[in-house]
Amino acid sequence: MTRRSVNWMELAGALMVAGLIIVAVLAPVIAPHDPTRAVAPTYGNPGPPSAAFPLGTDELGRDVLSRIIYGARISLTVGIAAVLVTLAIGVTIGLGAGFFGGTVDFLLMRFTDVMLTLPGLLLAMALVTVLGPSLITILTVIGLVSWTQIARVVRAETLTLSQRDFVIAARALGAPPRRLIVRHLLPNVMPIIVVMAALGTSGTLLLDAGLSFLGLGVPPPTPSWGRMIEEATIYFRTAPWLATFPGLAIFYAVMGFNLLGYGYLRRRGR
Image (cartoon, rainbow, N blue to C red; front, side, top):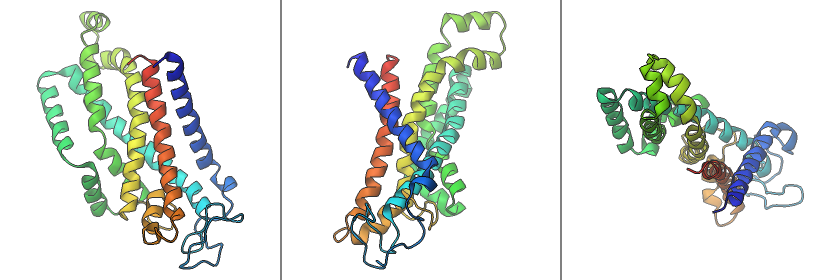
């Protein structure tokens, strides 16, 4: 792949993510209706797409387009906040294991390996069931079960950087561990952290959608793409648009963050 096409990949992802952010921020302005109130007399009989309701209405008469637009707010909030929690845990463990090595590395990586053996979705379901579904709970739980890959990647990068001449020289001059990590290792690990953050956001979006589909996401009536698909399952044959449009919204968001992450990664020659 040429550098020109890589730039286009990154640009496409950046534009898609920017569009998603704009929709989420301007939801009250863009959305034509209140997403939680019935605006059409279609109780129990979803309305098909029309001029008045471009994406149709659901079984309660709510506008699907408005619910998808407001759902972007929840998805982005959960996705970005959960990634921040993920980065805080994963980067700390990865840097600590890679820099200190020895027993610290062994203990941290064995703990990471144990976490990797636990299915993320099942662990998240268990934690949400215990703590109770809410926005804070969802983003915290997703962050707690999604940090393992970041920790392993950051550790590998830190191990490599620790053998570089500038780190060895700083260590020989008596630089304390905190200075070595903050001034020398962390800035050089930052590019891979940015990539993992972009790719991790797409993963948290999917995990949030999965939890919402299972009824463990943000409680109704707050619009959520995963819950919209779950609510549409009984109307799949008679009103397929109820599941199709939220599914396309999830696909769009995940594709945008993936393109952004992989494009940035390829541009840096990784």
